[in-house]
Image 1 (cartoon, rainbow, N blue to C red):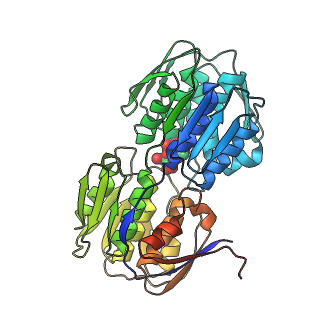
Image 2 (cartoon, rainbow, N blue to C red):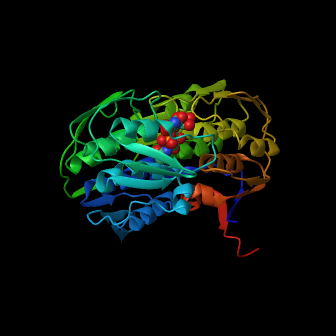
Image 3 (cartoon, rainbow, N blue to C red):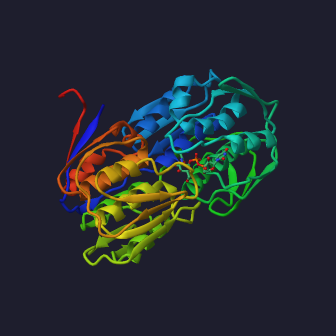
Amino acid sequence: MDTYHIRGGYSLNGEVVLSGAKNSVLPIFAASVVTGSQSNITNCPEISDAEKMRDILRMLGCSVTGEGNDIFVDSSQISNHTINEELMSSMRSSVFLAGGILTRCGIAEIGKPGGCKIGKRPIDIHIETLKALGAEVEEKEERLILKTRGLRGNTVNLPFPSVGATENAMIAASRAEGETVINNAAREPEIIDLQNFLNKCGAKIKGAGSSSIAIKGVKEMVPAKYEIIPDRIEGGTFLCMAAATRGEIFIRNAIPEHIETILQALESIGCKIKTKGTGVWLKDCKNIRGTCKVITSPFPGFPTDMQPQITAMIAGMGIAGTIRERIFENRFGYVKELNKMGAGIEICGKNAIISKGNSLVGNNLFAEDLRGGAALVTAALAAEGESSVCGVQYIKRGYCRLDEKLRLLGADIEEDDGERA
Ligand code: UD1
């Protein structure tokens, strides 16, 4: 199993450049299916989830070419409407493909999706949304078979602003007959990115970023080139890691409005932050005080994808914190690992309570999911002594060359791919 070896106690200092957003590239790859045309997607992050999504596109018969950050997807020749169970179960985001495949083939056969183990993560909202747009859905053991004689626009009222269901509805509605309105839509920046991508391909979508999105179905779509936005969660992760080590970093390409609640949380405990254009400076984390209070909620609230990293940062700083997780019911799995380091965190239902005055000592740690893994790295960077973090494959699902970027900031981190043992 791939492992990071981290010697803690070095403060992170310097400049970092963010990769493209994981949560944009996955739905945008999925959306490339609906276009039936060629898309050149740039600033793609080199992460394993994006590689898996490309494998799924190939399996559907798309041509996927290009290297590094610059990828071409040609979906004009779809030849398959079934997603292999292994790929489907390895990544929850593959459910986004249902709307696109249905539009193109009139039928889609998919396994029940997988992904990081952070709660039940049902897909009922996706299914109801596709039904509202004219899909018939049949469940056969572990598989879902969706059929349609042509998707039709409709009003879709989401019971919760699910990011994935909003994206699935946008993709499916973009070529449906007539007009769709998605009410109680998710407002995340990645929803706006998906709208911008689809519109560049000829779709007629407006309202993304608000809770009501209107889509006029179009008959045909066109080739387009599109650049993915920078990853706000990667940005937030570097800020937490740097603050935990009392360092000073400069993020060259952040979008400050996307990380506002993260910046507010850091400022609330005395970190000095400056933003200008796409630059974000974290300066002077020496006079840290007070209690860091965070409640996760859909955008523009504090992102659940930053909850583990900020908890680890608070524990690493030795200050008090209360963290309330309101999106996923099982997202504190990493806390037992932090407690092995001496964090003394108590879980009371949806809350993690971090008490003041604990200090972290290195240990052998096991990541069980992507952001939980990033939290363990954050804690190990701040701890005294050496830690190993096993389960680097989870971290690579969403962070592009995390160890390299951290070394450039002065961290003592090495990856061991297991072959040396
Ligand atoms: C996306 C992000 C993920 C992030 C999450 C919340 C991607 C690729 N992933 O995931 O990183 O943590 O948003 O910001 O963009 N739910 C249902 N039924 C459904 C769908 C969702 O009950 O059909 C529930 C989920 O169990 C969860 C909550 O709604 O409790 C939020 O899920 P959702 O917004 O859909 O997250 P994802 O799109 O899976």
